[in-house]
Amino acid sequence: MLDTIRANFPGFVALHTLADLDKYEDAVEAFACGGSRSEFMASLFGLGIPADQIRILASYPGRSLPGTVCFE
Image 1: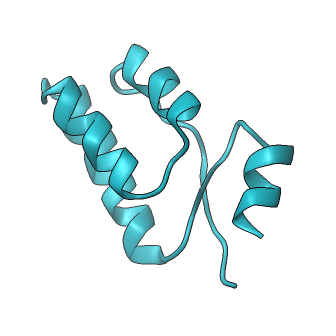
Image 2: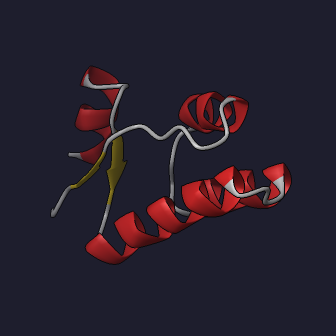
């Protein structure tokens, strides 16, 4: 189901759990406050976010894509 959401709605970050959504929001906020780009990208990669979305987010500190949680 996550793959379907990612394929059909590339403007959304699809995550597995509410805890992952919190980690995503924390990573975006930390990066916006001057955090390391490489740590930011590694955090998002660890959450299973596709590389193309990570590159978009890393290009614009403080900008986030809407997040959704998919319970399978």
